[in-house]
Length: 340
Image (tube, rainbow, N blue to C red; front, side, top):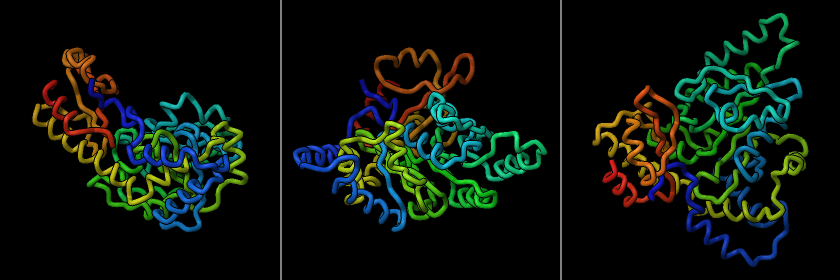
C-alpha cells in the first residue's frame, strides 16, 4: 500500500541513515557533548547567520514545545496560540500539564493575524481585573501552520513587532520548517526568520531524520536549559543519535534538498487532484494538501492508500490530508493516479 498519511511514515533519509551506520562504532561522550552534536550546532548557527545563538537538540516535537514554553514563561503566564495550533489541539494538554494555560485566539487558515493579536493583548491589559488573570507571556505560531500555510515576511514582521511592543516572546514551531522555506511562495530565508523571533526549532522528525528537533535560541537560552531538558525526560544519554543526524542534515544543504523534493512531489499531487476535478479545502503551498473527498470514494481507497482524515466537510464529504516527504516517489504519484 502507498501512503501519504504523513511526512514521517518512512524511517530516515538514506544519507542520514548512512551516517548513523558509519559512526556507529565511534566511542563518544554522552548527553550531547559528542563531536557530532557540537558540529551540528555550529552548522545550524552558520545556516541561520546567528553566531551567538544557543542550539539544543531535543528528542521530539511535543517535548520541544513543552520545554521551550514552560522554561520561558513565568508561573503566572500563558502562551497565545491560534485555535488550530498544535499545542492547543494535538498535544494532549502537554503545555497545560506544566501549569501554563494555552490562550486561544482565532485562526485564519492556521495563521494568527497581527491586528487580532494586538487587540487580544490590549483587551487583557484594559481589564481592571487583569492581575487576577493569566498573563499573555508568549506567542506560539507554526511555520508552516497545521494547514500547510506559511507566513509572509511582512506578516512575521508585523507579528514580531506586536510581541516586542508588549514584551512577550515569539516562539516558532518549525516541525516542518524546511517545507515552508522550500515553498515557491515563501519570501523569507532562514536567517531572516531567525531575526524575527526569540526562539524557533528546526524539525528533523518530519524532514528526513529518524527523530529529533533542533531548538535555536536567537538570544540567551533560559537558565540551566540543559538541566531542564533532562528534568522533562527529553535528554538522550546517546545524544549522538540527534547529533549525527543533524550534522548530516546540515551538510551539503541536505535539509533543503529534502524539503525541495517534498515540495516538488506536492506540486505533482496538486496537478493530479486538479486534473481529476477534486476541490481543495484551502490553498496550501507546502507539502500538506487538504482535499475534499466524497465519503464513498474514501471507502474505495481504504487499504490501498494511506491518508489522514482531517475534518468533516458536510454530510457526504470529508477533508482529507495528503502529505509528501523525502521518501515520496513518482511511482507513488502514478499509483495514486490509477486509484483516483
